Image (cartoon, rainbow, N blue to C red; front, side):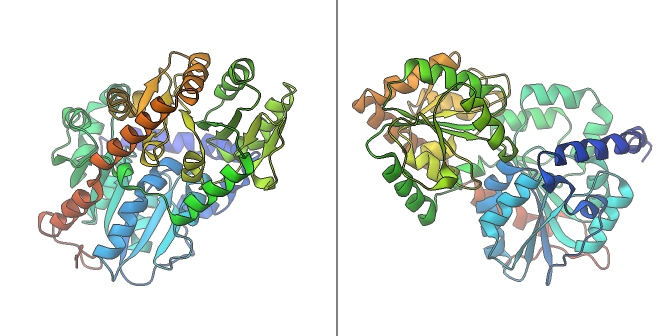
Length: 434
């Protein structure tokens, strides 16, 4: 407790500013102040029967969690799954993926104060928990340890940059790592960095995102988008971040032939209108995906202003540029593009997905560009070479298929928690697989 005291005091001091930031962000995205009580562990929703808790911060983690959540529901059929988030976009993604499933509920995770963590655990009484990727909250994990709630860090990734940041507080980080009952790391390099920070039970399970597959509805939507585009080649700029759109738009307008169409999909929905204004300010004709109208021949950009349709966008495109990699933001997931056989171009900044990006380039599923203009030029080169496009498509599908199986390995580790975890305190349940 003494080790966490300075951290807790910092949280208490920061809380007014955290709330002000929440209100500020709600100006552009009102979802940030909906369900505000949940951020202080005040919940109206209750799960029927025993609960498995899965924490998925935002969009990327939620989409990665999809095959794992479905596997959990199958492996523990008497349980419900409560998915907690930190962002409204993550929550909406969860609703889009599981909205009709009565056994999947969603809520915000409370801020990391011990009293709020205790209230969260008392309300949902989870049998065990799964935290996706890198989200570690010291007070929450300490509360789980006190209440004998086993927790797994699944699909764990830790870049060198993040590892250096955690290493600045070695005692707190070490205790937090030791509070995890088991860790499933994406790669051996991730596992090594986690162990250096004090993690004990670490296994390399692979990347669960390879197990995400497109639905029939996504593929049908892709067909509709292609019909709207007609015979025009489609260059997708996927999950772009602030500052990248201007670079990509300018390069595309300058380099691409008039018949080529740029399908531009910002990562954050609150920026859809902002990006539309950015395009209009350049005098470039834009249409929106949400308008569901035929795409005019003089339209240069189709704005992908929708949530939960990234698989459809990838499947509809002839080549995809991956956002987050054109400025030093770490890149975004390219696995979905590979899974549907869409050639990929990434920028120089892929440190959040380094091994996946490097292997995709090495196997021929992706090409790396030096900047946004070089990325557009590389995408146009792929468009102009039918043989190259076919080879990259085949390489991408093979790359995605080769790395599947992480979900199964994660479930196996969770089954092991039945015998490895301490006995539950009265009122809290231990996992019981079927």
